[in-house]
Image (cartoon, rainbow, N blue to C red; front, top):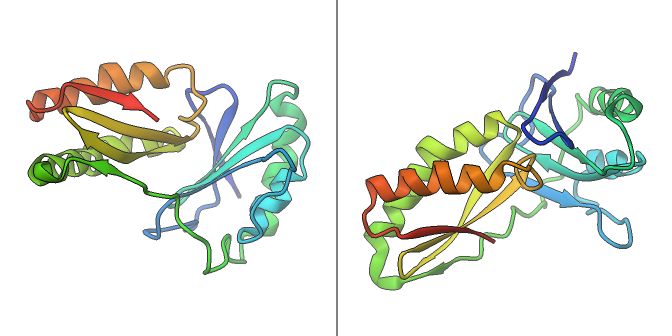
Length: 186
C-alpha cells in the first residue's frame, strides 16, 4: 500500500512506498525537459513521465514527490501513479550510476566556520521539516552574507516557498549566525 500526503504545493503530492527510496544516498530531481526525455537512470521516473500531466519527480529518502501541471487534475492521474509505484516497489527505484542533484557551490573561502554552521542548521532543522512536505532544500553557496539555497520536489513550485525561505529559513539563520544578511533562492 502506498501512503499519500498532500503538500503545501497544490500541484505536488508526496507518495510513500513504505520502503527506502534513496535512503542516505541523497535526493534526485527530474523535470520533464523540452524533449520529454527523462534520465534513463531511474526507470520509475521514465514510467511516471508517461502519465499525461506529470511534470517533475523528486526522489527523497523514503518518499517520491510527483508534480503535475495545471492542465490535469489529481483525480485523473493519482491512481496510475500509485499503480506504477506499487508495480516497482520490489525493484530498485534508481540504478546505481545515478548522479546526485548537482551541488555546485559558490563560497567565500574565508568563511569556512560560517558555511559549516549554515550547513549544520540546514541539515538539522530545515531539511527534515521540508522533507515532511515532500521536498528538499539544498545549499548552493555563501558569499558576503548572502546564503543561496535551491528548493526541490513539492517545494520547487510551491506558492509558499518564498515565505518559507524568507520568514522561516532566513530568520532562523540570521538568529543563529549574525554574519548572514539574506537568503536567496537559486
